[in-house]
Length: 67
Length: 193
Image 1 (cartoon, helix red, strand yellow):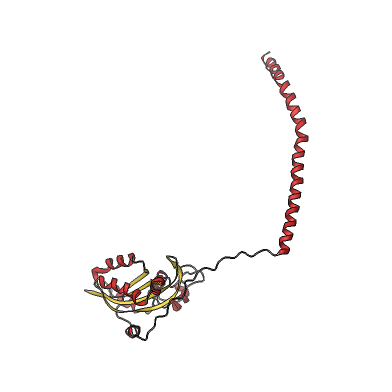
Image 2 (cartoon, one colour):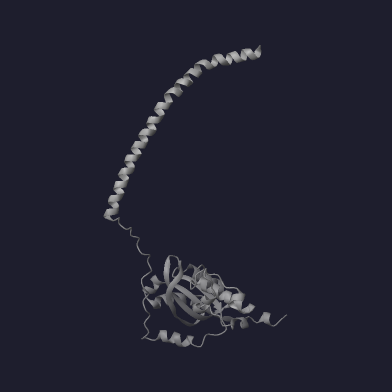
């Protein structure tokens, strides 16, 4: 078993916060879609964190789902 | 065994207008009811929602950090779902409280801190139909009168045409009807012969 699987705290230290709407909106397309890794330039783990943060912000109506 | 959580609560502005302390108390009371140890709770922001929730266009956000027993999560969720003053909520597990959080929370607790009242709800602008200008109204009346006159003439011609053509056709059909039985009988007899 790898060490990374048992360290969820490391994932939280990535620094992407769902409350930072200005930062998150940089990775949103014109119609509200999350940009791909190719366009965001993130690593796989950081892209997952970005996705999670955007979805949390959408749930709290901090960001819109569409455009 | 307790864990540290961050809770973000979207509060109805109608409740916030009645008093921020009372609105904040509704959330903190729910937390204490479920054996949570509330460390900090403060007003995060008041802003326009990206989409309306329960018909509300604006809401106030409250952020709280609290310790909660592991088995108290479902009960807390249920209480928050049933409370009408909480429009939405999000509870996430965190490792530590941010460094600035304690200072911001204590600033809100001080007496000189004034919570700004939420602005008036963003009501949609009433739709007002523009009145037609007098010249356009006159021209439309004229055109309507012209259309009506043209329509009358058309109806006259339409009603006139069939009356002229129907008579000979009707006469022909009557003549055929009178002659047909005889001819059909003849053909039958011919075939039989």
